[in-house]
Image 1 (cartoon, rainbow, N blue to C red):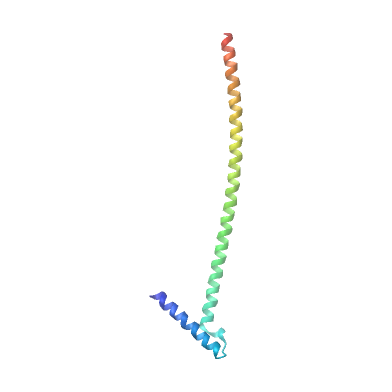
Image 2: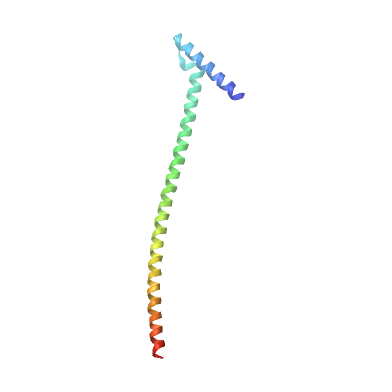
Length: 103
């Protein structure tokens, strides 16, 4: 109900502003003009906050992409280490078999 009253008051203010303009008066002195200015200020603040939030999210996305790239590089390094270790293990196993056969 309160929201409806606010909207009705706003409508009356706009109607009064239209009447002032039709009569050749200065619309910038009307309540509707001040309401619109305040709404514009509020929207600008919201827009700047949204822009700041978007920039923050972009920074976070960039950080996460960098982290993913590091993890992929680390994964490749670990795979290479694993391959090297498997080669060493195969060599040691064949060496062990060779020594065991001689004994």
